[in-house]
Length: 431
Image (cartoon, rainbow, N blue to C red; front, top):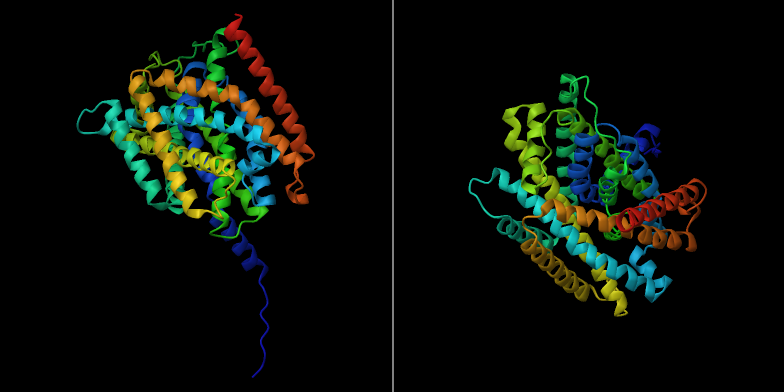
């Protein structure tokens, strides 16, 4: 019998490589799911509705200047096999405590804001009228059940489905709206976004654009979890991250376009209450796609915010668990049962605190979200410094080193972050 040599077909190899990259999609898409909630559905849409296209470039620049600090988590985790939280611990116990305190406060404030927005959207299509706290409590129970039942894999799959449906629906709405033309009359002029009166709104928008920067730690832990289930390479991890991150930046502009085309100059007053705005958001889609889609859009928008809520509960709890174990000189690998029980405890704690916030701020959804966004804006420079110091001080493989253009972009990012923070402090306390 003759020996037959197997010759690799270059086309087959290329197809297999692309399939592997698609299979690697997970943490980056989950990060995008966590990001799209408040910053896109709320801030980007409002930016378009109030100021038209004026803030489009600023939105892209915000995403660009924060890019290296989010990417640092991927490079550090792939290069060392450790999470960002472990890296903070190695930098010094003080850094870990600083991160832990900021992360803990951000956790229940951000989750509360997302829960309230989820509840306001769900109330839109429920057949019976229920209060925001009751709906929020029900959503919270469902989130905890899904997470405690297991499941990085289920969470990853859910995020991909939600993101795919949302992207398709939003693009369809924008294309139809664009084909009809903007509703604003030809002589209409949007208020200027470049005045001190608009500065507060710009800060709110930038806080969660594309997401609170501590989500880089979520991505780091999700990546670490993914590596236990499948092979993760530098190429696949960065591909996954870039798909998620660049996708959120593009989607932010798409939501801005929807606001600019459907609401800007329409004469319709932008609602300031949470329930009013969530209903207005649904109406924007139906104005483009058609009345038949009203409840379908409400369900899709709800699942978008629900996806952000559940990924944030999981992400914040994972980070707090990792911090707790490190402060007790333990690791997840050496104490898996302790890690699992600690994760469940933290999910319950942040959920209960978030629900307590909802009980006190039921009628102030938009104010709550604005506070969460301002908090994220003010803490962003601190998280950026931590990530930059960690990834530049660590010995990483050549293809994962933080050098050249990334370093230059980081310094421009620092100028932007600290410059706007200084301007915000001056505007808040001295104006």
